[in-house]
Length: 161
Image 1 (cartoon, rainbow, N blue to C red):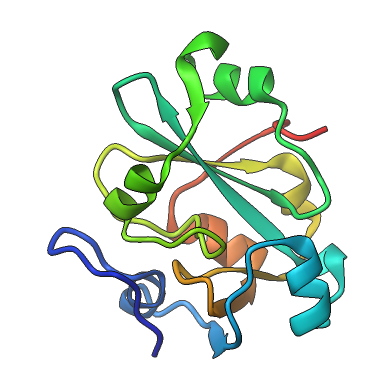
Image 2: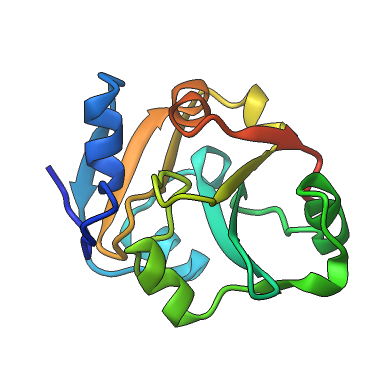
């Protein structure tokens, strides 16, 4: 079982899945942070990869956006999907990731931190098995996309372009 920087309030992504009896596997590797790292070190097909980006809404809550790795987040669409003004949405900083108990390069949509909103791009509904962040830059989770979304009660929206 993999673990990440753990806070007393948070379960690791692996613990969240295990607690819900959701099948998954995880594997460790050298730390990755970019698509080039992933292609070089993991040799996984990009069409199976999800990236999760973290955002802060002003001085309020965090938003996690999960989408196919080759897609880009459309900030306006993401803001609309969480009912906030685009001007209030900013990319999370390292302190925000620490609050989530996650590392850059390993952000996962799996969190139990209160108040975090998780949004999946609609394209994820058409994916089968995917690879996503584990909370750590040196470990990856393999899981069915539908199981992943159900584990966090994600909402779906067209957030990519």
